[in-house]
Image 1 (cartoon, rainbow, N blue to C red):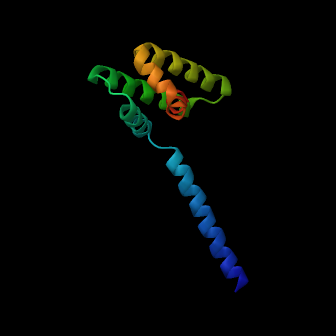
Image 2 (cartoon, helix red, strand yellow; image 1 turned 90 degrees about the vertical axis):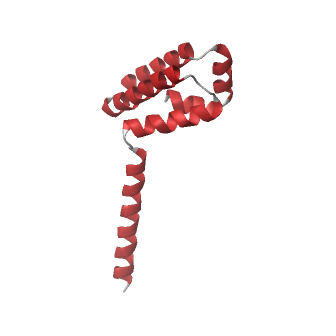
Image 3 (cartoon, rainbow, N blue to C red; image 1 turned 180 degrees about the horizontal axis):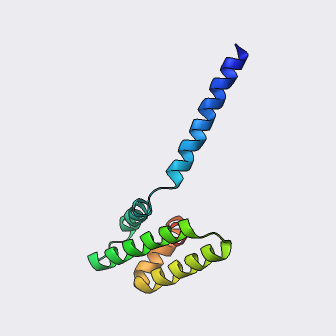
Length: 108
């Protein structure tokens, strides 16, 4: 009986871990849309900027999926930081940087 209960526990634990990993590795377009929606809650953007940021965030997630080294990931992070800082006006950037969690999420 103990073996059966232990086996069921292991099965449930393995399924839970597998499901959690699947949630982390969403489609790059889905992840980009989720991040963009979080940004839009804080900062209203023009449609052209919104579309550009969506493309940029999608590219970020696609590149991060392909990156194999920490150096490659750091290059993506630096590029994202630069692109976001040059896309937003100073007022929008100040508002974004005041929300540190969102800012870090967009960059990394």
